[in-house]
Length: 163
Image (cartoon, rainbow, N blue to C red; front, side, top):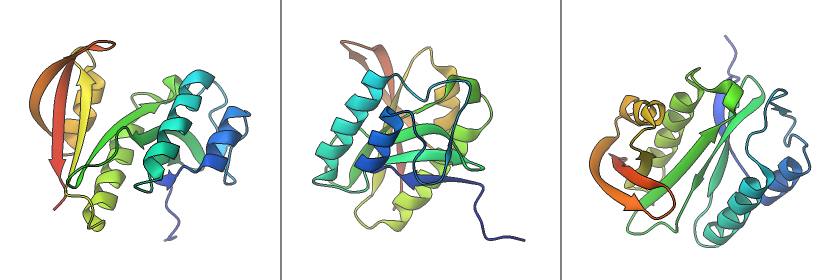
């Protein structure tokens, strides 16, 4: 059996963001041919966010990869505090409901458990986003509350311990 991982998370660098914005797959990977990972304005926002967080905490963003294809992205969405990282993630629309995000978040939790700087990972989901809620539940995240966001409306707050 091969040691090659067919599904994984790979750190997303500024160079990788630039390649994605140019419509090019970085790191000898393939892009999803039938849908964009994210609109250019979202990729640019994520690149700026990752650069700002990366100045204090790295890695700060990852590509979700399945069999050499970049199927989604995951990133830290605010500067970590007291060992807690807050994540956001998304998958290409044509790659939804295939378990990719569940596996990628599982890999992210494994990474967090191996990093002494990380004690907890948190995330938020829209109250209507059942698929994302299931991703977090399958990975052992626990619902810890709700809040209202000015842009996104009602959100469920989740946490998973890594220590």
